[in-house]
Length: 178
Image (cartoon, rainbow, N blue to C red; front, side, top):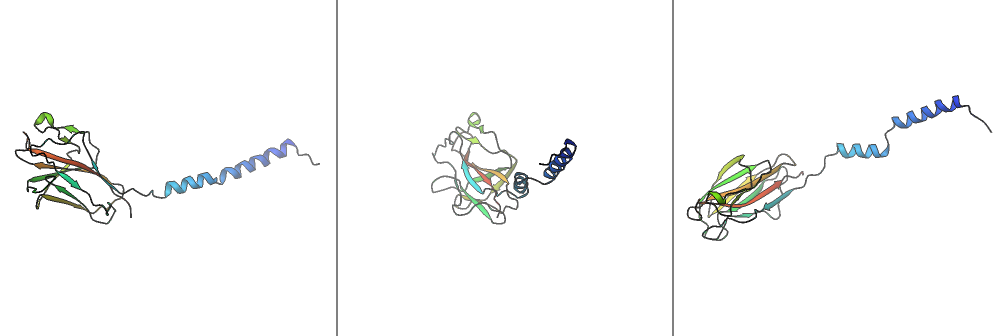
């Protein structure tokens, strides 16, 4: 039986520990590969509702029609159709689309003459959408995955409530990668 002195064992142990420390462990390699690889972005388009709908005198609020077969994917056109009213005949009222890249704190418009109407999207950008047969179409081709976008249509509808504006549900969109 060979006996090593403590003086010989200590340098061998230090060399072994140094070699182990220099080579990345399997866990570190997997973790690094996970960080380096881009995560697939979900492609989502969904309606977001307030606690209540606008209380229009005609009883019919604007609606959102999301495409069933298409998702918001980078490089492909994506569209959302808004209706000035939920049922025909739909008037060609002035429609303004509110857009934001930030989540909003819902604001109740009831105190301002719009009972039950909620602004669900920050007023970062507004866009007048032309209507045809009471339908307004918003088209967009995403260029960056992971973009989070909120939309809401405000319809100027004189006589529907004291303020003359009714609101659609909001739309939340997250663009996905190809």
